[in-house]
Length: 136
Image (cartoon, rainbow, N blue to C red; front, top):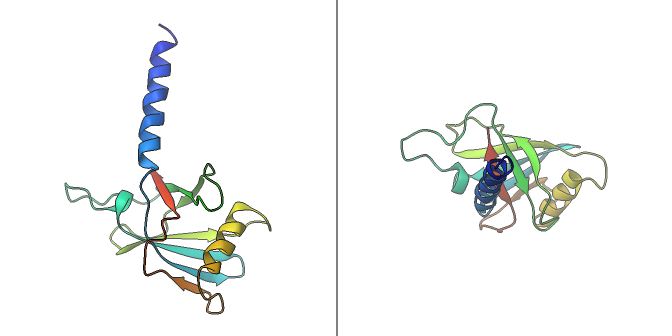
């Protein structure tokens, strides 16, 4: 009995997390801001949609785990939301780490999808690549 309650709690948490990870988001743009910083702009849909009670889906200080299946199915990385809850889109500012790191590969992958000369990639469709899980 001592192990059943924690096991049930763990299983319930895993089920909720797996369910949340199946929500793709629409990536609107990627902007290269400095040599080692880029910004992701995401449409407010899926986990970022307005709650039915009229409350914003996130508040200051919350972070999301972001996954890019093109890089790895199982690697999730936490990033703080850098946009205000009342903005029309959700923004993350990400600093690239050392060459070959996950953030470096994410930056290279996203810029390869568009014109890298401008330092900005705009998506007119859901590329179905990024998934987000939100935690407070």
